[in-house]
Image 1 (tube, helix red, strand yellow):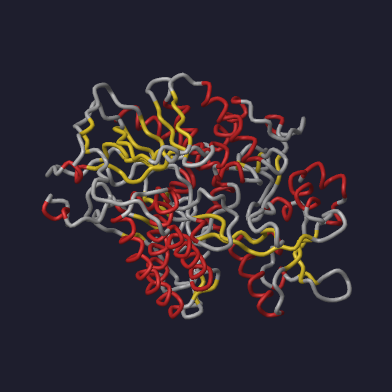
Image 2: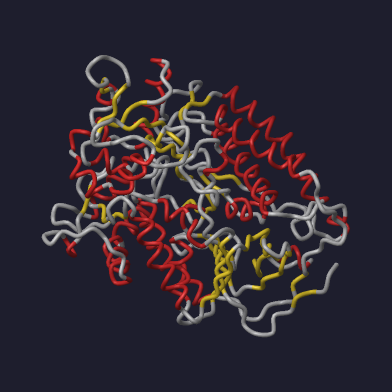
Length: 556
């Protein structure tokens, strides 16, 4: 074992992830405590920057807290925690005001509340979405990232990836488990460092890359969910993976999202058949048509594609006109035009794609997990807000509201200088020369999840997926135990954990509800509850499955 790391001063709060959730926590902490933010890729690559739609704000005279709570509950199909939904709604206006005060350039309307233009998205009863044209996430992320970069008490570590949490088990202590820091890989130097922490905040986003087709960036590999699970935290509602109904279908672009707001402004979904510019179909599935919640729209598209044997449908916005589309959806207009699609004259080919992880690490409204000293915020978490299906634009709101409450709780309960922490041990491992194994397993995992654990599921498919995931896990664990770690291997390890959690949760839910639809259990039960998985921490040393674990007292 390498020398232990002994913090000599009060350690910083370590935030894993540099998206909206992580940056919000950092900014609320930094005036009173030093912060280290880890970003495993470039700082601009967080999922936040990919968010097109906007952020909910109960601001208009025609809106109310009750209306937002009701819409959140309706979209969540009976599994939304009412207290969480109400708390988020009550703080939505303050969240938007905080972003305005930071300088986020939201689209303006002199007659709108706070001078903002509010748009409407599927599942919302009124216009309540503050947005920056069709690139809201990018606008928010750029402003907050610049503020974080300027803050003298925040250290940004780009291309650093958390490997695992350091808990009492690593210290061979009999006390109740606690989080003391993280092992983190400096990707450029290929060296794992021990980072003591006053608290650790997981803000790593979701697990969309577990599927072959996704609107998520490369960073969405479920790192926080997997690390918390391995440390013994509860994980909830992982069967509810939101498939965004409208991802651009094009051979050169498989991850570009076509925002919900385009349907909110009147875009129409059509089958690419017939002689009159396509055939609308949504009203035969739901009376709300294109404005139905995402789970309903995604299943409707999947159904119609299979029924008619087509590989995509059309989202037709040509009737909105070139001027309107350029003004309100400049990013989509420009991207599609670069691919030869003029959306003012042609319908947009779209398909559903994995978009948002509605489940995750179980936390309270302060971001607390089951492990003292460990917090989680954003898409990494299950707070009860999203239930069985997330309401559009509630995700950015959750990051801002709970990022603030998390920071306040950390400040009131942070660790002082802690015990000496064991350094990462790679004395018994080798350099890998078979990177192709990782690439092959990555492709196999994502393809089997797409084919067997997608929009429509069956018990047989889920059982097949579970069996194949078990085989993949054995290969990955063997590789992980014997070779030096790199980012690809760590992401694959986290993805296989998340895949197993999704499949186990799906098998437990013997009904169809929200984002989980089973042909074997097509009906919704009168009463249902969240799916919460519980486990003890894995038997390992420094995160390695190791024969020494039992002898060192780390098994159990």
